[in-house]
Image (tube, rainbow, N blue to C red; front, side, top):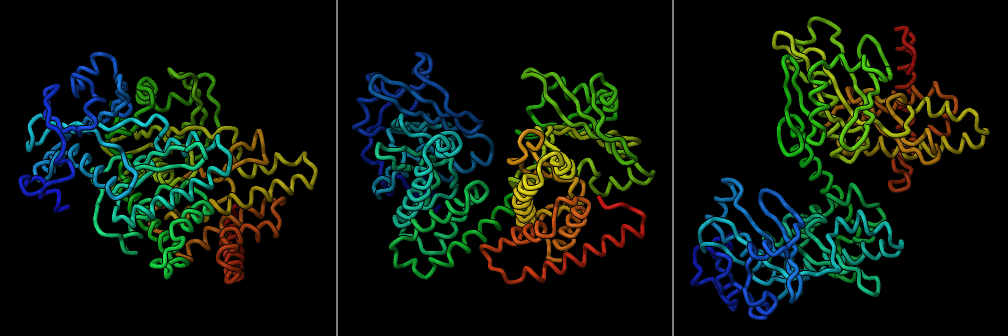
Length: 575
């Protein structure tokens, strides 16, 4: 923001909300501390090195750009945020704007002046004012508050359902009040909110990490929608449609200026969120191919590849030395051995105990294939990249942990892929066959229980830009089917045929649905009524109306018949 530059360039003109702060020197830093906070810091003043040496601190977060400490002082608890300049970009930003700790200190004061709940600032400090470098921010501690993401993942599931419903409502009200006050957070996600459940059971929200918030006049609908889209990116993948609806109703309640978008607004926000997420996922697609905080490249002789950071080095080195030798290890269970691939189940010993993983070798079927791999992604590389891309999209698939390629004369030849095993899982055909001993009514009930989540998963795959060009029953596993069939959940496997990008066109979706429908023909337990129920769930007919399902039903039926004829002509069974 231009105001950031004004604060830096014209400090004698720009009098921010910290103008009344006392200037003190302690711990080698120049501090600006609010007068009423000096008793909290004690006689020695703000001195983080001394607090660390005295054992008063506990690390809450740590990264290359900042470390957050919880400091237990005699007068109360404070949080110390140590901001670092980590790279040229961060250094250049601080040439043009004040220190990050100062920005967050001033913004927190401005938010509280506007009635928006935020962290309670105590003071900020730096070594040399006006010079890029490290800075520190002190805020008051709130022992009962927890990060919103931690609350959603760990605390909320243990509370009554009424608290979950109230949480969605209170978050909507908080966001509405924030936008009414002219505040927009450019990096909104649950990690930048803290929540405290009051004695009456009402969640109370506050903003944290506010160095980049924008403060101005009340937001118009375009600005509100843009900020809601950013907030919704996390919740669209994890929160139910019902909870998102509760949020919206609370957000627009009794607001006349939003009356025109009360019915159209949710659709605009949801479509904008999907487009924003698609762009976000596209930007992360190549992350799994290089060295970064999540992955690392590995190499030994003619074998090279990529591994996830948390895979033990001895496991990686053992497979790097001779990828083929793993198939002959004692205790290995061979799952498949064909002209195209070999699949085995390995039990590897790690520091955390034994881990059961799936090791797959992609064979070279012709002499031209290594040359083709120079200009396209090999099957192993496609499976590796697609697996991580689908998991980014919150789609269930086994996590790939190691990719290797054997090279010959510099050309990528055989590929190897190590993935985590889906626990207690059976392929969909095997899961249906395992129901044979059950009574007919129970078998029918369980199959119908599976229809809806599978249809919903295929719909979500298409909505989030995925296209499974080998979508058949054997490429869907039912997690948990071996132990509790009634609660089994579908998982995609064999991702060589998956393409990820924009949502597929209708023609491609019909083709994939027909491929899956053709594989159902070999499963007698899946009735015609089940296939119709699948299509209705896929279309979300309960939300979008009944119009159009017959056209899609007819198109899928015709494509299925053509697939059956084609396989019969080529002498290939349906699978």
